[in-house]
Image (cartoon, rainbow, N blue to C red; front, side, top):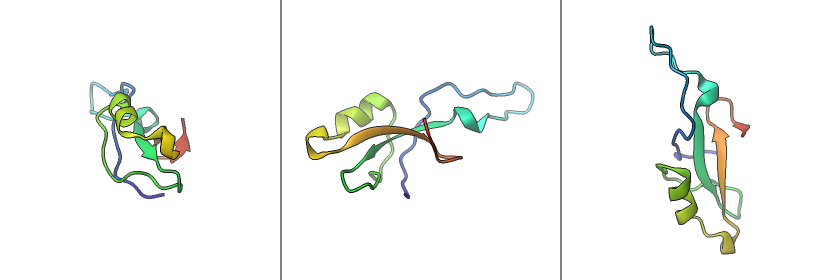
Length: 72
């Protein structure tokens, strides 16, 4: 799946010395359409994605890690 949805919903662990962010903490929020594609827009929060999604049409709010593409 290809998408441009993104937002960090969990605080990313940042190193004070070099600014490194643990990629495992970078969780994205998107809306999965009934046909299996992600909506091509960014959401500032899970609440914003939930307001956008239309569950009656089979859409779901999903969270995933964009770096490793693993389900959260």
